[in-house]
Length: 411
Image 1 (cartoon, helix red, strand yellow):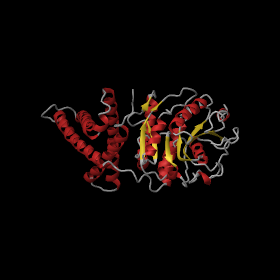
Image 2: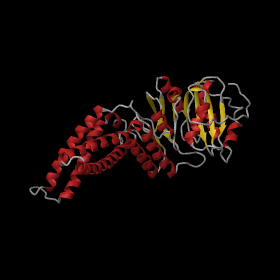
Image 3: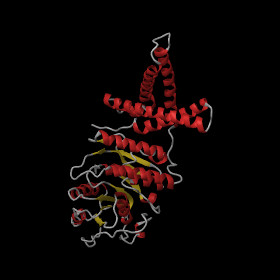
Image 4: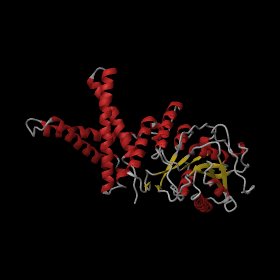
């Protein structure tokens, strides 16, 4: 690389958040195509940036020497992260640095970095060492094998989180569940749609005006880009070694805002995703077996000729036994390929608890749809009930597929 004026910062692009089709279309870069451009958005990361640049440079020098660039995009950090990064350029000639003084926000920082990037493949990684750099090689292999998008996921084999609190886990699951309801065609294509660690072919996002909100740029890439095949690589999300976490309630509100805006402004999102028909049919058969279990237990507990327990109490017990029956069959048959890789008792207990909660939510949806259809659409209680059962079944299957039967914990 031509080390042009080591102390020079990259010019910040202005105007639309749109990636040029080729680096030659961007006057802020020299006309020199390379394979991979990795953007590192930073804010208050002066304690981490030196280590991040060193580790990434060593790894990429070994994997694709002289065919990459690192672009630190700093939002004018008070700790002068951009200045520390700029001082490293002499030692790491593949490093480029941008200081943004007018704009703020992680997603727009990533896109501004991509706008000046010269790579045919564009990537992003956090600047706080929570994303393990060694996963980059696996993501690059995924692209080499033909994927348009390679995502580092906490929810596939080899992935997980190191020490999240119960509240943060709940918020993460809740956010993904909302996403599956609002944008199933986008969030249903990846196991970890909230990942901020991925790479994409320039051709898939070039010429598209992106309009992200908050931190979750992956949603924008899948929802607005022309993304075909997707590869996923497991990684363990680690706690910060330096600095403080930037995750706040504001990010969850922005995430919901982003989902709604994508839903309203995109017409055909996620058409390339496919519904797992075979798995769904197995799930339906298991659910049918649960109906018989529920009826049998209800009879044994409440019928005057048997135990004659109160009806409500009998129904609660029968419903829980039916849910347990369904879980066992789904674990052993419907989702056997996943459960076989997680056979420890605590993994099964986690799946059972998630399955139970999701099914109880499905019951609430069942009752709601039943009343809406009966009172406002079809005044036939039996047809309305069939529609309600169908809606609840799809809910139970899809949310369990994305939240219950997946790898979420590692040793």
